[in-house]
Image (cartoon, rainbow, N blue to C red; front, side):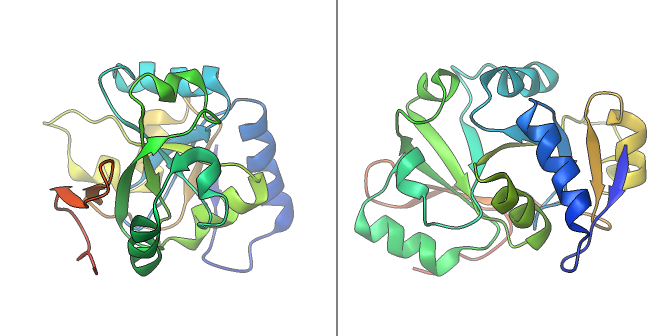
Length: 203
């Protein structure tokens, strides 16, 4: 189902419907400050497994990422030192994924790689949902073939046409972007950009 949301002044009942779906193990597609993404309640392991199957990824070989609404509860889900925390504070909210060592609070599916990507996107829509959920959202880019037209990953109506039967809600936040986030590996305490995407890292 396609739901229209805005950067502010959303109907609380609509947010509540989305949160209920996530709490019941549902999947949603939503805008970020980079590309449209698919996500679920990060602490619901079966929902995370569904996304891995949908994307055809092996969580033992691929890093999984979560969205947090802010940095306040970060230490529950990842191990972060003071310098890394300061770096994240300078760059969040923004189009970055910071790779950190995971904590044992996340489900086992995250812990097989001992690392987790942390995102706090600049898009207020997904941060509002995450805050209302009171838990992180596992997030992944939409699965697309190389030969598909770009509109199928940027236009929410076309996204709904393709993935509407796979998820509970497709959230229409306008036309999305095509550039991925910049990925910064902080697992050994020294930040290293492993993928330059959207955004310039402020150190």
